[in-house]
Amino acid sequence: MDLYLIDWLNLLLRWAHVVVAIAWIGASFYFVFLDNSLTPPQDEASKARGVTGELWAVHGGGFYHPQKYMVAPPAMPEKLHWFYWESYATWLTGFGLFTLLYLLQAGTYLIDPKVHAWSTPSAVAAALAVLVVFWVTYDVLCRTLGQGPRGDRNVGLGVTLLVVATAVAACELFAGRAAFLIVGAAMATAMSANVFVWIIPGQRQVIAQMRAGAPVDPVHGRRGKQRSVHNTYFGLPVLVAMLSNHHAFLSAAPHNATVLLLLMAAGALIRHSFVARRRALVQGRRVPWEHAIVGVLLLIVTAVWLRPTAHPKSTQADAPVTLAQVQTIIDQRCVVCHNATLQNKGVALHTTEQVKQQALAIYQQAVVLKQMPMNNATQITDDERDALRRWFEASAGAR
Image (cartoon, one colour):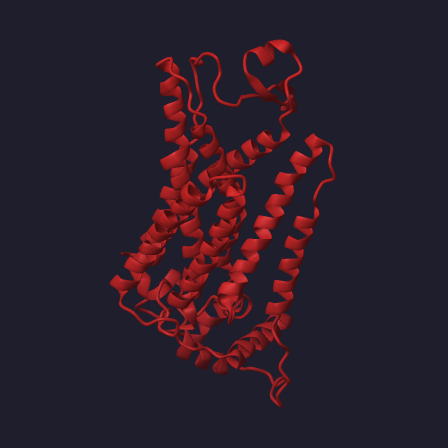
């Protein structure tokens, strides 16, 4: 496929994905906030109608009064708003991006021979299998462990172990950036599948029972609430897995599975603190900020752990780096993808003039972010990255 067309598809899909993801995550966060902020109705008329919780809010110059019926309202309203296209559109655009960048360009983005050398069809099939196996296993855990007074705790432990196993396996099989993305995509698939398989069908069954005049089975509401809560806890871990794509120092770390799990745990703890905060305020209890504190500490520990080690300066550490030396490094490590014939991302680096024009991009991608060369396919060394750094900093200072 033409690289310019790929860039445009990448942009449009990513743009759409971010927009619908904001809508989905925002709706999920709002309804969890709403559930944890509801108080029993004050007037008898609301109680008589079956209202179990209400909230008064002000926004945009007006007052809002949402009310919740734990099972169903006495009569079906004429207009009923559904929340599901945000979820479906997020998954579809995300899978489109995943296909465009990782499945159709598996040799570049999905496979790292130093991690696991396998064929493109096998790698693609394995990546898709991770999404399916994660959802099936997660769903079985929810349906088998979710019973009884300790059901939520048992499911939480089972799902945590599933995420750990998935992260470790992905980082042992795929290129680092792809591994992080696949783990996030597996969790996002489970989130969207929760909506598609359980939450929306359960709501449709409740409506069908009401219209038929039959008793409403409360199991649909309980199951939908369980999966919705899971989705809100998955949200921040999934987002950090997706954002890690832009920060190669995370996925390229020696123990990258541990890095990913620490970041996801921090996100889940911080999210739990905000969920518990609303519940504590309604019940008049102390806000349990300790969960957020632990999450922040995990982020600090990870940042300190990944901090680059200062190497002793060599006798040539302060020696100036010439453009000719830089061009030699570029020829060995970069020109294979950035040349007159193959201008990946529209960038060519086979002449010194082009190298000077792209100096900032080279510094950002190869030195700061360490995203290039992709998966370090050409084995650029730390000394070579440092030489690029010294050349760029000296050149910038001369301007």
